[in-house]
Structures are given as C-alpha cells and as structure tokens.
Image (cartoon, rainbow, N blue to C red; front, top):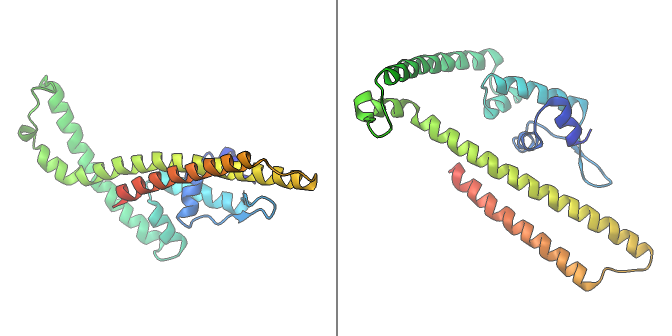
Length: 204
C-alpha cells in the first residue's frame, strides 16, 4: 500500500505516519522502481495499535519501549493510571478555580494572578503547558518539512523519468532547464535546513 492508502485506511495523517517511522515504530519497505515507501498489512496493524495507545495518552517514547519490550504492559499501564489520577486531581482544582473566577466577575485587566495562587498552579502545570506549546510548533514545522520532502521526491522522480525518455530518444535537456531544476532543488533543501534548525532549537 502507498502512504495515501494507509492514511485513508487507518485515519492517521501522512505527517504522523512518517513521524512514527522516524521514531522507529514503522519500517516500511522501499519500491525498487521509484524508492517510494510500500506499507504492508503488518504496518497497518502497528499503526492501529499506535493510534489506540496514543488515544490513551501513551507517549511515542513509551510505545517504543513497549515494542522493544523494555517495559511490561502492566508496568506501563500502572504508571499511566497513577499519572492520569494526578492529572484528574489537577483538573478538578482547575475546575474549582475557574468556577470561582466566573462568580467573581473578573476581567483580564482586573485579574490578579497572585491572589488566586497562580504561581503554585504554574509550578505544577507550567512545564507541561510549555512542552505542549513547543510540540505543536514542532508538529507544524515537521508538516512543512514533509511537504518539501514530497515536493523534492516528486520533482526528482519526474525529472529522472523524463531524462530517461529523452536520452532514449537521443535528446538532452537544455542547459537552462538543468540549471533551473538544480536551483529549485537547492532552494528546497535550503528551506529544509532552516526548518530543521528551528525544530532543533525547539527540541532543546
């Protein structure tokens, strides 16, 4: 199956599928003809498991630990039960505080974070909030990066295919076409470098 077919079958976006590949959870074969990824029924089954575990809040890193049998299923589930219980308690506190603020008729200008123990809340949840914000930024950048990769692969395949046809007919590309194609590819790779640099900065 192609990545598009897998996307439609499993309901996971191409960017996420490729992210799981980079994480080592998927290992699709490559077509000998065009080097495109070829996904098997086993790959689809792995994606279904990933989708289910991610819906429970299990991290990609922990899914990889499960897949590599570095942690037992019971041990990991017990850890997440404890984690979710803690999150539940924090959410209940947030609900109580939101209800209190609703009754107090606050505005953005009149809000006094110190009066509602905002610093204590930030100490408990701030790290997760900032991490989530960074992950969202990284995800958007990765999506842009994958689109550029798709563009590069498509242009390369088309250019190579047409070159073979032309050579078989005794023709060659005009020099300006070759230079133009090279400039486009260099530009695309330069954009990728900038995006990867931003991603690296956010991952620190």
